[in-house]
Length: 411
Ligand code: HGY
Ligand code: MN
Ligand code: MN
Image (cartoon, rainbow, N blue to C red; front, top):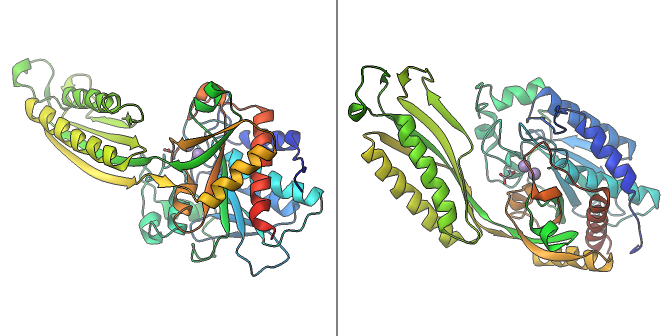
């Protein structure tokens, strides 16, 4: 079975057809979690899985599982998947590649009439991105017992306030299957790297050994609304000026803990957002990351100290809420070496790599042996409509996924 070849053209065609759902003018994808477009993507995925002979189930949080039977149905399934939801200005490959590479594995096993011992399941997790509804990785997080179902069903859309549970019902993906509570033999997730390392190193496969830790915060700066004309500069308590200094301080934290630290402010709301009123309130988010937990803790302390000092100097109040976090997460050695051997035997150039992004595999690693396979993306760009990956790299990643799955699904 070492020489099985997946069908790269078929994989790319499926990726491009999926990318038509939510296609944007600049060539990207906007398929926010639990919108009608997310429903259309799920429906298409399910149709393809059923055409490939899979049995599909949906759990109470909308996670979609497509099961290809194995010789022994009592064995825990070997699972492959990722997510179909995207960022607002997302790309064609983030998430969809891992789901459709899993489908390509099933299609290839069918082509060659291969029966595995363990069942093989492809999964599309609900709301990995955490853009419309936060925090991210909700479906996999609930499956792994990190989040409670009721807590997630009550989460509001970050802009409109619509509740996740209502949207799940509206699109018809409030499934009947229980969330989690069942064994997974092994979980593999293929994904674009979303950074520049593989491309810069000239490698086709990233053998992902783990993911860096993340901490997300919600910051509210409170000053005083006042008239932009009569209010003397020295009497102002301008929340937006204070927030802008804080945002610069966040960026400096990212630079002050080299070589791996990352620090980002991605969401900002200023009120009352009127041209001739001094802003009295600003809400913004902070995303800190580092592969080392102790350094991430230092970054946290620095963040709190810097923002408190800036607020005081500006005569404003600042409230910092710890919103969500997960520690640096190593993947299962056995699964990682299955990926490494598959890359090696497939003749693909490879290197070990730590994931800069969070992925569903990070939560599934808490309840099952898990690992990831990265492929390069053009210029390392992702969460951007220009996101791109080559047919050859997509095919190589799917082949490695196939062999890693066979390594665990065939005794
Ligand atoms: O934010 C992340 O790392 C991922 O895209 N959810
Ligand atoms: Mn992703
Ligand atoms: Mn993403």
